[in-house]
Length: 65
View 1 (cartoon, rainbow, N blue to C red):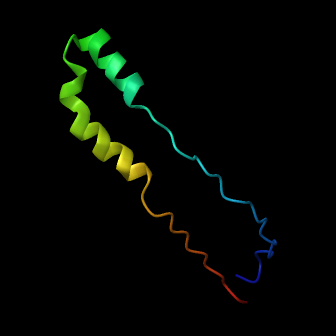
View 2 (cartoon, helix red, strand yellow):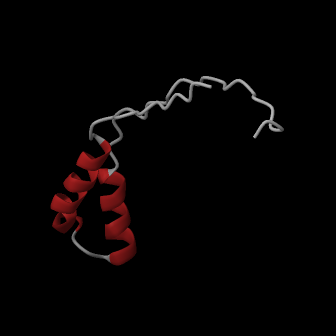
């Protein structure tokens, strides 16, 4: 690996999405395109929204050479 030059890494800040409530848009889509009762999907949409609010864990790996 001596032939490969070592290039310094560029540090970029992490992006944060923040809270994003997509339930109204999904419910409107279900009603319009499938003609089903969108309230039947409340439990699934809540679970899906909770996944986006999970813990933000970032692992930084440093390779000292």
